[in-house]
Image (cartoon, rainbow, N blue to C red; front, side, top):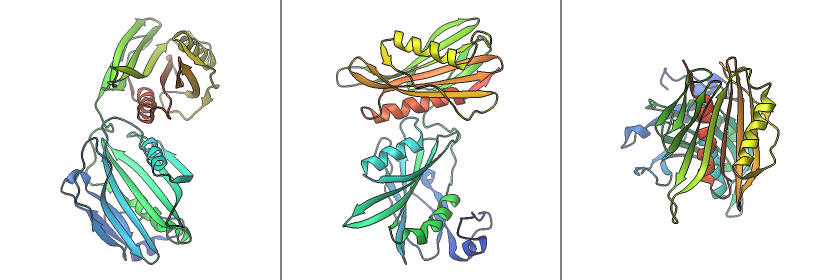
Length: 342
């Protein structure tokens, strides 16, 4: 094992056991962008998968690492993302399509998007299987680690799966955390800043007078019957004395949503983790209706020492348009996480 790889510590394995049982696997693809490395049990047999990965195409198997005692496997898949989404949301959809039932899940917020780590079960040939699915991305390259074992064997190899997850890294890191380019939208009042929005969203500037500045951005789908709006992102800043508190800022946002013709009975905003320079953050997620279409309203209120920030996205619901919903959710998170203040 190479000295430059730190030993990940699994709950049931100590560093000496890892050093004794695991070796480093370096995957070399025809396209070096898909090279990766991880630690694997030394008894694993590697099957290469020399398939090309196409933009917009399905996930492609890069490598399959098999073990015979107990029988289990680790498959690494690659997928080119055509638009910005959270890997965790992509994973949830992939599991649903594969009819894999999640039994536990852990999501970790990262600049490139929330990482998904899910344990799920399924039945094949009358046998019960358990798998662990770990999904992350670097720029537009999405990697999925798919571990599988018979249900009776899973507790034996669960720590081994953890070691491979903890040691995984793409050989080439992307220069940007995003799957697509972003544009920076300038805001002037009540303080100067710029906000990141994926370029696939069409931005329209609104008011920019003290103590308010705002814009909205639309996600347009070509559609068979012509262009249609799949989601709208709205972003606004106002002065710190313009709103008495987060609830009033949220209520004003919901009044504007209803004024746009969206029927919504909003869930109350709940406090969530925040990052400097914000001192507090709240998020509300509510089902809604626009004409005959089910929708969802996600609204985030951020408190800054010099401003209140309210951002919301109205999108078609996840069941009707899972891809549009994923893009809308990620766009809201980008707009409220990637803000550069002057």
